[in-house]
Amino acid sequence: MGRFRSDLFYRLNAIPLHLPALRESDDDVLLLADHFLAHFGREYGVTPPPFTPQRRRALLSCSWPGNIRELKNVIERAVLLGEDNLAVSSEASTAGNGAAHHVFAAPGTMEAVQRIAARDAVKRFRGNKSQAAHALGISRKRLYVLLNGVEQLSSATKD
Image 1 (cartoon, rainbow, N blue to C red):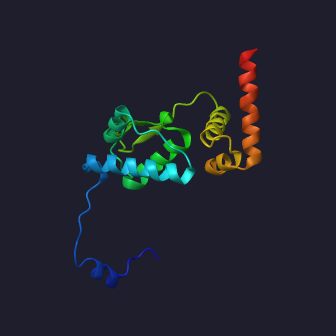
Image 2 (cartoon, one colour):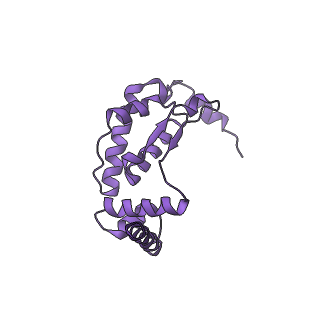
Image 3 (cartoon, rainbow, N blue to C red):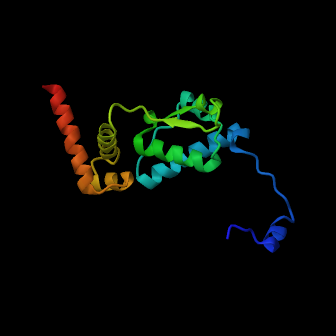
């Protein structure tokens, strides 16, 4: 286990291909980001806004050590949570380990973050709670619990 078949290696090695890292081609980063934005918008039934120039610069500043998979995951999260929640920090990639950090501005506890994500998902799916729960990967029951908490939080702040 964990060994590559030598006959297959020699067949594949007949024509060596060099594929550059994603960070080596700014045009590809933006092209792929736009593609994934449209793809996940269709998949989740939403129309995400196009990336702002500031977000494009942030995407280009990242080293993308995970290459296309990492970019794809970041864009999917942006579609699910709203592009305004996405901030790509290239500072962390220069901090030593080379890993890019994708930071979501979120207040307080994890419960508060989940409640805000639930509210945003329902809004994004125009009130369709089944789609919102599916997109978040939670049950409808859990979604309702989170939404009731959001309503309690917002009514408590009005008092």
